[in-house]
Image 1 (cartoon, rainbow, N blue to C red):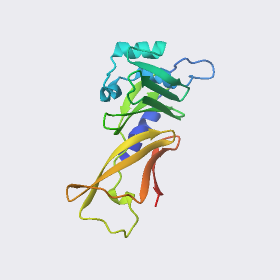
Image 2 (cartoon, helix red, strand yellow):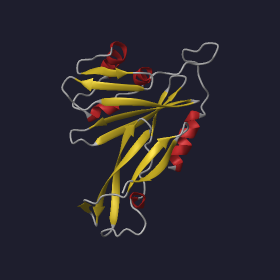
Image 3 (tube, rainbow, N blue to C red):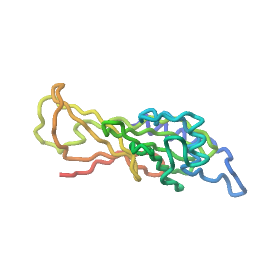
Image 4 (tube, helix red, strand yellow):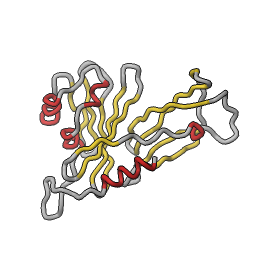
Length: 201
């Protein structure tokens, strides 16, 4: 978590370049403008990968051969497919120095896939790592009996306040269907993502 926060802080402190600037300073990028800056890796998790040319068409016209913009607002972009595939969404988490553009989609098995990019106010995009996976103990109340040597692996789902961490558990190397006591989130505080643990049982 510390490495991610330090990297994000450094990026947010980069000198601001003019992008659509006027006397009052640079104008914040919309989600659609940010989408146009970011490579198309997130679409490689879908059945219809997007080429750079198709991305440019989608950003400019709102539609490509397989994808169309179903929602287009300042902070949110939702891209749907005519084939009924899971949406690809983009949410902007803003700061004074730029923004984090957070992608979300699902694979064929319904597993949530998220991707983060830093967008400077000068119109430059750089990939960001996802926050580190929480400790397995974060998902359970102290003193709860747990089976064997329990470990977790996590995926991340973007929502409007940050990232939700979705764990799966193994015990002694075997899948373990155990319900967690706590939900774990990384919430945007205007500068970085801060881990928040919430009791749900």
